Length: 315
Image (cartoon, rainbow, N blue to C red; front, side, top):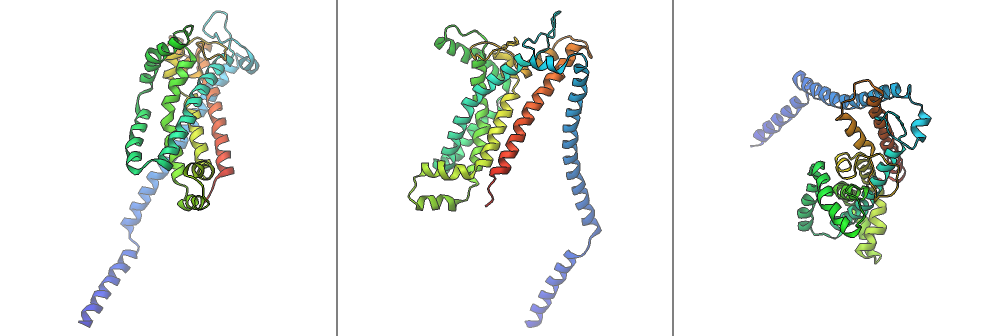
């Protein structure tokens, strides 16, 4: 009996030793997997740099005909007219106003939903409500656009009779509804990643669940919440179809959400669907506008990175 146990133990050791020996086939498989993972990462970086290079290259041709000062300070944007003006301010104002309205809707509601799902909802409620909430993120944006035009705008006209058929207010409100799933889902994930012992310590000090959520959990999850907010801002700034359908495509330098205006993305869609010849100055304007949009989103991403780096908590 003893000899059998010894033989069994020796066989197990031999199998363990053989599994640790160098195997050319296993080493080759690992190298192939490593190469595939490297290529995936490399192509993502390559595509990003290709997009940036294309925008800079085409925008450089545009700025050979239009000065940067005129582009940044002119208050009219009429590149397709005979008396052409190339001031980006009307498009920037429309983008800022519609994005601000969307964020005023998405950030408070998304954060409130995240606090409830993370700190107050039962397991059953959370697992039922979260998939339905995330379904909002899967609806095509063109559906949101027609929802804003055919439902939200007539509803707002009952409250504001002078509201035109196209307005930044309607587009911004629906964009906010569309962005809620992104903000709430990421914020809830950040809050749930906070260790339970912080909550237990707060409860032991006599704090309520709401006080714990606001004064303990949210500060501890600030870096993740900031990332969710930056994603929401980038999503609002880069939205296309909702503003193209519901806000109108008339470049108008206004800060009044009750008026119609064009955004940078809506203008790019408008020109891309037109008959402008390739290489013309009007055609080049879409790349200058695209470069402006890229710089705006890049600025917010850099700010978000700095915030995460500054307030990141490690547990």
